[in-house]
Image (tube, one colour):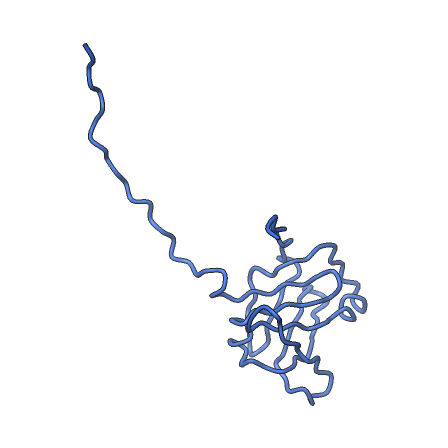
Length: 134
């Protein structure tokens, strides 16, 4: 004779975190070659500028991008991305001039726009996870 010991299921709901998806938040990356990738959400938040004046805060190790027109003195133009509304800037000179070491592609987890300047903190930058998908 078999005794049934199964009890009635007591389901619990796994609550979903209230967070934005990866493509709905500001996202910026920097490669060892100096290619700075700025996602479309970030570009939109900055007013979709065609260029940036590049700033560097040596004491705090922060990169600043001030939106500008292409004809603004010292402005670096953005180039279109093949993969969406994001833009790229080529900042190899920034890395060389300020001796910024970027051995692997990094992302800035907490980009902030303060007084119109996109601030990227190298101290909190994280190595970008390498995808096994190709």
